[in-house]
Figure: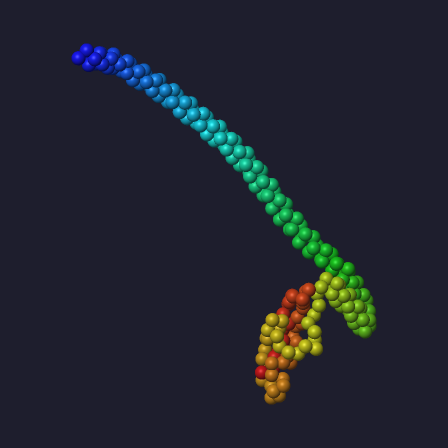
Length: 201
């Protein structure tokens, strides 16, 4: 009996001690929880700062690239305008050079006309005209202009323009050029003017 009471007293003495230990453990858990929340908040703040910094860097980079893009667009626009101007000048100068080359031929014609007024020699006038014609023909050839081959008597719609069609009794003459009313000319293997011809049918 005495042993039983002694054991109960020991158990009763342990109970408050265990309760105190449990409370102390609970207090430790409560102390840890606020610390964990503080660490998470600090990490969240740090992450926010990092993202804000990254956004700021990206905005700066975007502004820089936008500035460079606008600069390149302005440069390209200037280049385009300059190229168009140079191209128009080349075309204009090329035309000027061609026309300038024709001026000596004009001079020859004027001298020929003036000479024909004071002479009755038609043969001399004719000879002068032939010289001017040959000079002009040579000048055109130097600039890539040449007439179609006169020996080519086969009609070609890409080079010839049929202004008249004449019935022919000979089968071999059908589709052939019977007469050339106006010569055709090429410039650098491209048709400059179609030849006007009469074709057999």
